[in-house]
Length: 168
Image 1: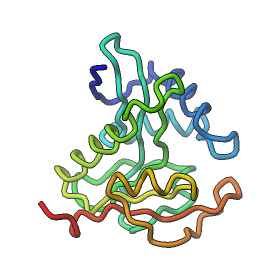
Image 2 (image 1 turned 180 degrees about the vertical axis):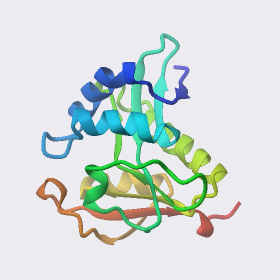
Image 3 (image 1 turned 180 degrees about the horizontal axis):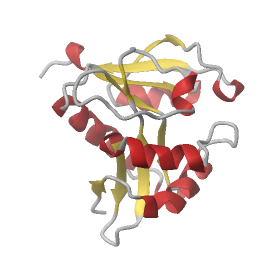
């Protein structure tokens, strides 16, 4: 299957929300308002995977911050990204269920890493649940302990891909 990538538009919101709701519990999922704000405010760090028919298969999104770890406030309010520097965050990485196990999520992570390196970001930071740690470790992320996040009343782990520690 051939996969291409692009930034989302407001017309993509319904499909993105369908994928978001399929990948996260109601307490974890972003609201439609929050997702629209991300499309409008941070399209430079919002990547959708599409097939030849232009169908959205999955996406990855998050703002750029100065801190190494995510804070819960990032899930509520989005501000534009700085042109360079900072840490790229991942608030949502999701793939439509009918496209699971095709490597799309890993491709999205690779695409976001390329964009982040071009913009001279220090790395990529995210929080995830324990069951997803092996997936992120296979994609060059290191566990850096339990997060202070209380999002959706879950236990989250800080994972970071620190570009300064990678061999070029």
